Amino acid sequence: MIITAILVFVAMFALAGLLWLAKAHASASKALENPAEHIRAVDIEAFRNLVDPDEEEFLRTNLAPAEFRRIQRERLRAAVDYISCAAQNAAILLRLADAGRRSADPATAEAAEKLVNNAIRLRLYALQTIPQLYLGMILPGARISSGRIAESYEQMTRLVILLGCQRYPTRGVSAAL
Amino acid sequence: MTVSYLVGYYLWVGPHVLLAVVLFAMVRRRLYRQFPMFFLYAAFEILQFVALFTISRSPVHFGVPYIRVYSIGLALSTAVRFGVIYELFSHFFRRYPALEGPGRFLFRGTTIILLLVSVGLAFSAPGKSTNFLHSVTYVLDRTVSVLQCGLLVSLFLFSRHFALSWRSYAFGIALGLGVFACVELATSAIRLYLGDFGNRAVNLCNMAAYHCCVLIWMFYLMRPERTKPRVVNPPPKHNLDIWNQELEHLLQR
Image (cartoon, rainbow over all chains, first blue to last red; front, side, top):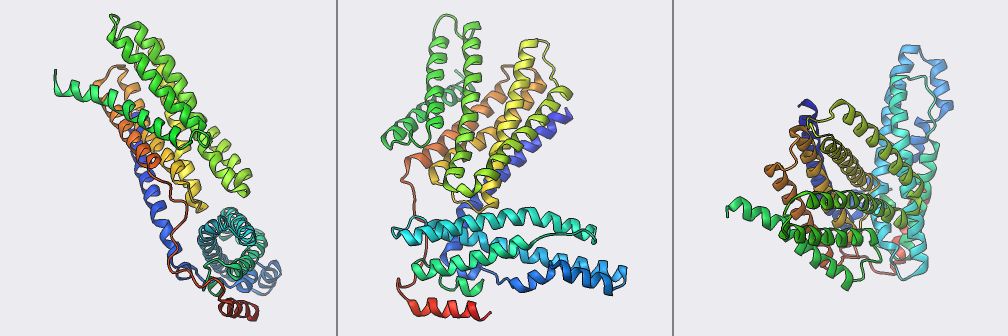
């Protein structure tokens, strides 16, 4: 009886979730109407600093262990915010570039294709890195590599500029990145 | 003839008639090239309905031959439905080549986890039916429902996480199938618990869900597909000053 009740509950929950996801999909296209408004600025240098192993080593040797753990947790929390921001920007750019892929101009279509791939890659990295950062918050001594995120984000920013220069409505987006 | 009988009859016949309309629309729009598994599934469902309806009108009514044809049809239809789910995943892999590796990994990983969960459920809650064949059929039905529901929900979560845009036809097929899979998971669990093949309320609930699912397919597959996303107020095509300013702004950082 309990298993049946759990399964019925799970099925109803899945149905509600599915309908919510379908509704969210329909409203997601609204983000395209003014992409710059939805883009949040990401300071790549600050992010690099937060995940820099040398910086971490410096803090470790110059601070008391308890103080280091506290600061390190704060740094990692800030890094999670940066990555979440970058991943959100990537999602918006992905939708924008998706539209650009259908452009009649081959150069625009190619730049848009690259942007789509980079945005997907960035979201994949974010998916892998965020749990690692949370693990780092629990174990502040653990080494975490997040350099790929910064590189991918910079590559993506360059592609937005390229796409914007060619034709597509990315006005304001590159400035916001 | 009671209202319940009429409703039951309508829910049996109606969705298949509407599915035939969907099939016709797919042929007209040549959608069978893009979604061959779904086309096969729809055609098979109609064929199965025609066979079952004919048997039910014959002197054997809902006897043993009917149950045999129904069981074989159910097994085949379930197998084809897995094909449709894989087709929907592949739809994303084709559109987004960067996702092919992680996407296939996710599909396989989710399938294995769901399979382990449903096998665990099969052992921990095997059902009440005294008839071994019925019991095995119900357990398999629930196992398949857990797998299909889980895969479709993970497909939606996957597209949500990567902010992927669906083609509206694929979206409609996935949504309809997802709604049906969720309801079927609930009804298969109840059916296994009751151990009653012909529970009328459960069957009506399942048929009503299938009707909704066919209506969703009709809505999405019969309307023209929106190919271009809405972009309001696009800027002038060659406004180089703006782009140069933005480039300078980026280089100064």
